Image (tube, rainbow, N blue to C red; front, side, top):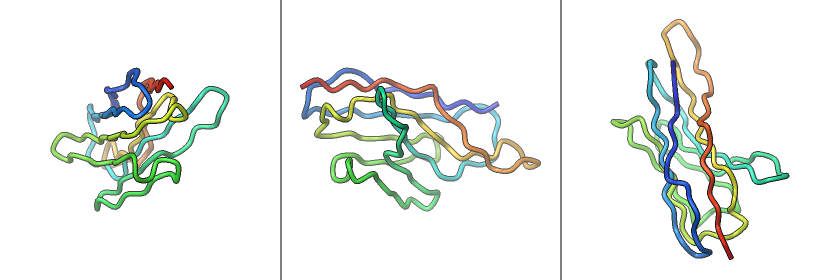
Length: 121
């Protein structure tokens, strides 16, 4: 019923920028917090950034000052602007959203399929 469709991944050189987008579609009645996670080969999936309904944001220490998370409620979309990219940022990036699909259900986490970000040195 609920799908998160990601776009914007790709290959960039160190110091470059990318902007990731994630749009929620399907049948739902509400979206709370939205965020981005990433997982590099051989590493655990980690939180990159999160944004609440009220617009409060939080970031992993490794990306503070370089990444910016934002959302557009009219489009049900969350963005991640990534600047000054480093090779260590290379990972699959996953969109996450806390969604209420129906008035008879509680809010539940949904995940996007992931988009590859590769930063070359």
